[in-house]
Length: 82
Image 1: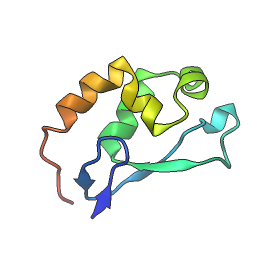
Image 2 (image 1 turned 90 degrees about the vertical axis):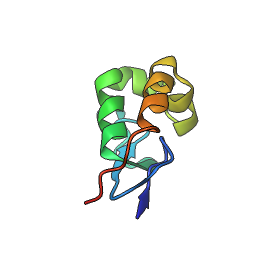
Image 3 (image 1 turned 60 degrees about the vertical axis):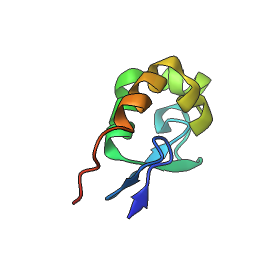
């Protein structure tokens, strides 16, 4: 099993999220493991400019008002097993 560093759930698999978007110079920077729902939500919620300026850590993402609502919801959901 894998672990999502944002929602902190044990999931079937994760994808790598660049904390500094590749389009903003983060091609070779730190990445974190996220479940697909969290990864998709981040990119649907924030622009790459917002991510690069304000959300370059998991803690900053967790602390954002938009993500707090989402995280409260996703943590109550059953994890799909693949």
